[in-house]
Amino acid sequence: MSRKIILLVIAFAFMFCSSDLVANAQSNSKKRPERESNGGLAEYLKDKVSLPNLPEFTGKAKFTGGIARKSDYGQSYVLRFDAKEDPKLVLDWYKNTLNMYKWKITFADDTTCLAKLDGTTCAIAVNSTVGRKTGNQSEIEINYFQAK
Image (tube, rainbow, N blue to C red; front, side, top):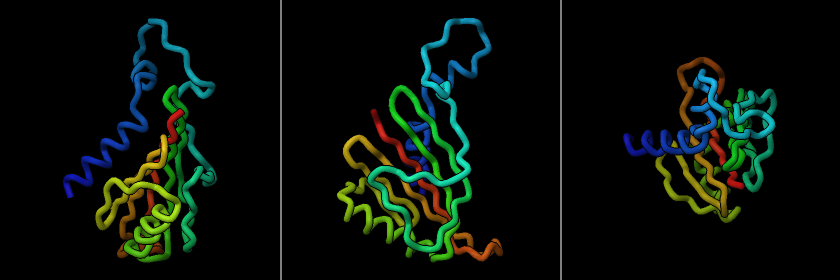
């Protein structure tokens, strides 16, 4: 369990922490490095986006939110969904589909799957929502990073 948490923290830090965010948080008057058009800041997504080489879950999933961020290193996304299907079924679908699409799975357990394809990495976490009275059984979070 602790290995999974460490891997997710590392994946999150890799995708969203960069010197651009640190420079943006400072309030001094030093000249800041050049930034992409969106300033290196995360943009909230109102609708899901199609991620290159990553198929969309074919079950009953509803997009609940996400963010996108462009940096000097590439493009990253975090997408969240609620799904009617059982968490194990959802994660098994992703593991099987990633294999079919030639992704290399670098880590997997009963709630998480990390995979790489060329310069792209993705982490998929699926958790149970049973007991929350939402009518859904799972929540899906996809962390996706495509290097330049």
